[in-house]
Length: 318
Image (cartoon, rainbow, N blue to C red):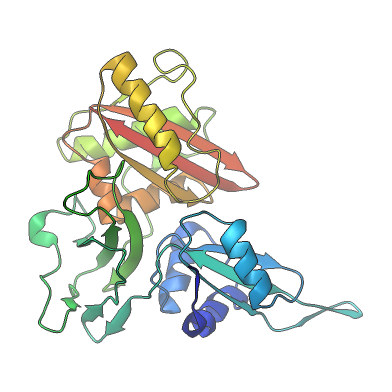
């Protein structure tokens, strides 16, 4: 059942209607959301040049969006005058998490709903993988977490697997991203490798191996879809940040049968450019941990750019 998040309307309107949210690069867009106290990860925003009501918003969020959508919020921006006429612009936000993170002083409180069988709360700073010593502290007595004072980012992921049931393919959902201190830097290591390229897959693999080399990890070899995995499904066919679990299962089966490889997990982000994608990969603890996994030896990289939006999916295997 979809939940309407009325309490988020003011925060979303502040982020979307003021400034140039949709034209901003990913690091700047993230800061706009954080400044508006919106910490939900994987939020998808839409605007339309007409007024919408709850029934229209609910219908769109339930049918036109990912099946993993848990809740939505909507509203209208102030009316703008365009020549002799007025222009109405409404916005709709859909996202996977049915509840918002709450920050009280230096404490993080997450009103997690019942679908979460397991919750992972992690922190990463400006360099390296998010190691155990850098994770934020254990739950306090009132069910919150103490946020680190250093510059970085916290992510909260929700697992839906019950202990007695086989784990679902390729991991939990990322629900929240929360800055600490001044937040993460707006650059990534070796970003010169991510300029305009005729072969973005090779460019992205070069960047992955450069940051892996910094952490003394073995370089990854490219899984060539054309030969080794002919007919592999396209993970970028749906322009959403949600895992395409049906196609992931098909690729997992193909890799095991044709190459004897085991899939470890998928990093998947939606951003304006390849560089912005790398920023998201690097500044999310869970994404960075998978990026720098010691288990990985191969990578299947699929990148699709349409109408100025880049969807990057990287599948790691051993």
